[in-house]
Length: 436
Image (cartoon, rainbow, N blue to C red; front, top):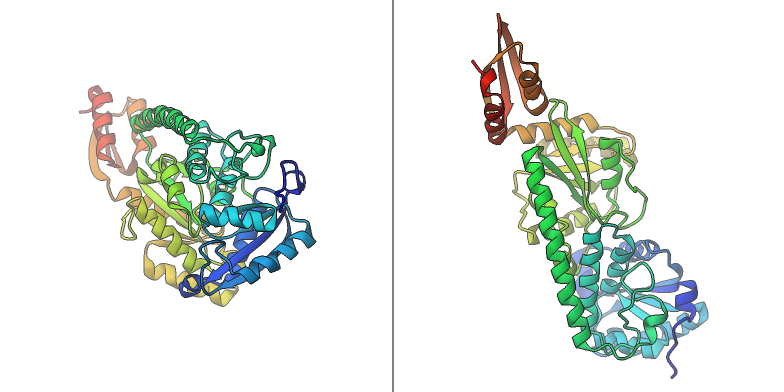
């Protein structure tokens, strides 16, 4: 059978067929096959593929050669030909051999879940670090698949390079060439990491506490980010809309400032290599003073998504007992009254949960107050006797601390203020002459 060539339907039209294999293991996890298929459709839609056919396939025994049984492979071949799909997405992890064999059987390009997610990351990454992370993950992925006729190193468009471009006819991508690129990328990435480290050090000198948004993709993180910061960050009903951390300064009810950081969304069965590849991006989460775990509480799969996010956070060393975590139960506006009351009571009992609607603004004040309280835990209350004529020193305390009480006595302002230990040291160094 003749394999398709570059510039076929796949490259020209992006017509795709999606197969969601439902294995015994997946059924045991409780996630519905339909939800899994819809998520795969959302992933494919995130890179503007034209979905022409979808199918859920039950797999009782994994075929080492093709993952799917021979009969299903034959049926899908007919469906691919009938729908004129140039790309087949198999929503699971395929071995290089399985991927190659399916391409030969179906005469079209085949990508698995890992390849699809890499493609999305490649299309969405905006910063230099994000692009380097994508390239590194993609090359490590491709390194195991050099035998594939579709593998190529030249990225002709956005994405990780699995779906199209004139480079796809290259059949000799030797391991040495990939290894050389990996070494260069790792070196470049180290430079970027050092730059980010310097930026973090600079923020510590400001210093503002960092509040990181995390959560399942499409949970509403970017919409909440926009709501809290009045910024215009990409916020679409689309999976993986955000892949590079975005930061803005937010003023809390106590008048203190924090840096709010929006990050990439997590997803079920996120390949370990991707978690590792984006670890530098997620360092904002690791070093955050407060972590907001945003959940789409209206999604039927919310509990399973919660489990997936917790699993990824655990891989990063952040456990469910971490005192920095605040659970943000989002999209409450989509619930009926009875369900809203149940969720609200659940949040009160949890004492670490806040009910919000990022879309309508409901619960925004409660969330900001919760962040305030969480940051205040590490503060110490100090009373300073400040020269009342030194407006800069007094303004600094109001700007950087949580002023609890002020009593003016003649030329002295006695101010009780909650400050982080580092802030107290900074104030005492900077305004030593103003203190009585």
